[in-house]
Length: 154
Image (cartoon, rainbow, N blue to C red; front, side, top):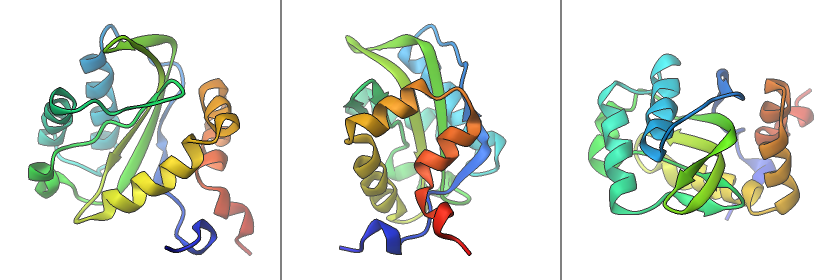
């Protein structure tokens, strides 16, 4: 398995980072994640429904107040390019009994979601990194946290 330092940075467009989102339900939060991916041209509108469908079959809550909603395999054709979005819900969202404050939505062509999930897991499973993401108040903080290899660029 490749070391993270050898991989490309996560495909995060700063326009897909929203730090003061408010959602009245899990599905509303997922729809907002999907819309952020639509807004940066990563996916077509149909991907949003596929994200909801995925969540209804298996929870995308991963712990530490974070969920990683993504579409079903059937929705791969709706993905234009790999991308992630980060929505922070300071007041939290009830996620099947868990309190979620950060949603990292992902979209990937082919099996690209496997790489994205692996890279996100390495970051989010570190309690300090997860806390930093939950507490971020600036878009640049989120970008720096999720694209650490940017610092190594010449």
